[in-house]
Length: 97
Image (cartoon, rainbow, N blue to C red; front, side, top):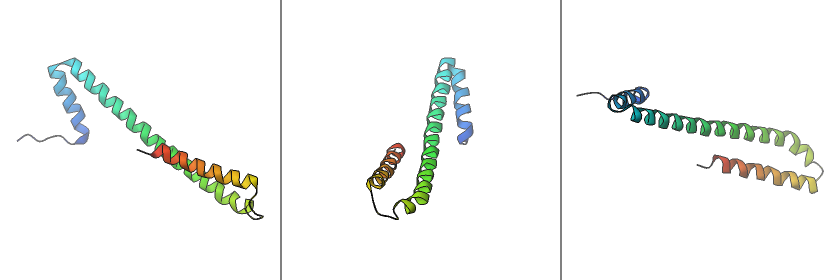
């Protein structure tokens, strides 16, 4: 029985077997793999950026929130709270599958 190659080798093996049949098919396959890899990198990059944004928002909120709320809630405090929830909603929207 022939063994199937592991994950990393399967793309190269499939492309070489396609190249034997038709070089156009091999080119199309390689471009499809490249496109999928590029999309995967983009999604991972967005996830990393969203994590950084969550950290920065939480850090700024923890530093400034206590001092801002020490003397009650004013107009600017409510605006800040609304913006905090707005940023949270945008992050959830960006990470939604």
